[in-house]
Length: 398
Ligand code: PLP
Image 1 (cartoon, rainbow, N blue to C red):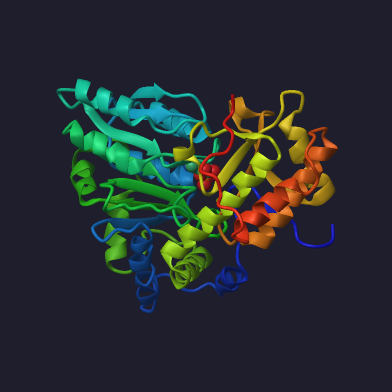
Image 2: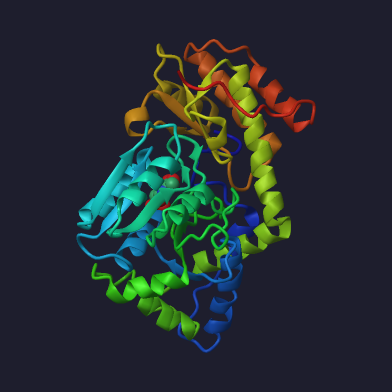
C-alpha cells in the first residue's frame, strides 16, 4: 500500500528518523580503548529516565521478558515466597515465569481492567508476620487492559505494614511515557524494554536496581549466567560489557535519551496525557467503553476498547490492517475478540493519532459497529484544540 503504515499497537512503537540514523553505524571493536567513553555516556541519562540517583542501571541484549528474568534470577532463591497481583496478560506471564523458576507465588487475582489492589497487598503483608514474602511484584502499566497502577500507593502499603520485601515493578509500557519515580516510590527493581516509550526496536532489556538489591544478590541462589548483575557490573565498571553488546541499539538508546530530555520528561508525560485524553473522548463519542474499570487507573499509553457483543474485535483489527494499513493491538488471552487496543505512546502527535482514530472509525463501521463517521475524530480534536477538557472518566465496561 502506498503511504506509511499506521503503527498503533502498544509496542513496538514508531522509531523516529533521528534514532534510525543513530543506529546506522559501522560495527566497532567493543573492547577498544575508545569504547568506554561511549558506553559510559549512556548510563547517567538512563538513570535519570528512571528518576533515580541511587539506582544502578543494567542493559542486556534482550527484551522486557529477559529483564523480568534478570530481576528474578539475581535476587531470589527457589522456594522464595513472592506476592503478585494478576490483572492482565502481562502480570499473568510474569507470574508464570516466577512459578517456572520454582518461586512460591501468592497470587492476588483481580478482575482484568482493575489495577494493583493496595489494600489487599497491605493485608497480605500484614498477615506475613515472619516476613517470608521476599518480593512484591507489580506491573505498572498493564498493556493488555490499559490500566496503570498506583506504585506510590503500593509502596505506602508496604511501608505501613513495615514489611522488608523488595518492590519489583514492570515499567515496560510506562517508562519514558508515564511518570515513573524509582527513588521517590522506593522501587527496588524496575524493568523495561526498548520498543515502547524509548521509541526503539525491541532488543534491549533494561533494569534499574536499588542498593538493597546488592544484599539480595549475595544470598540469591537462582542460577544466572547471561543475566548476571555481578558480571555486568564488573564489566560496566571498566566501560565494557561481559559479552558482545548490541551496538546499534546502544547508539539508538543514547539518541532516544537525548530526544526525551530535549523535550523534557514533564513535557513527555504531559504529551502522553493529552493524547490519551483525546482518545478517551473519542471512545466516549463512539458510545463504547474502555476495559479499564476506574478513572484512577486509565493508562496514558494504551486504551483497550470493548466492542459490542455481536462483533468480534479481531475482525475490526483485520479490517483496519487490510483495508487501511492501520495496525491495532489485539485482545490478549481472555480478552481475545472482546477488545482492540489503541497504542498511544512513543514518537506520536495529535495528527498522527487523528489519522488512527479515523481509521478505527472506518474499520468499526465496516464491521457493523454503528458509529457516526467523524464522531471520535471530532471529540479528540475538541480536546486537543482546547475546546473541551478530557473528562476524567470514559464509560466503564459493564
Ligand atoms: N511487560 C509488559 C507490561 C509488556 O507490555 C510486555 C510486552 O508487550 C512485556 C512485559 C514483555 O516484553 P517483551 O515482549 O519485550 O519481552
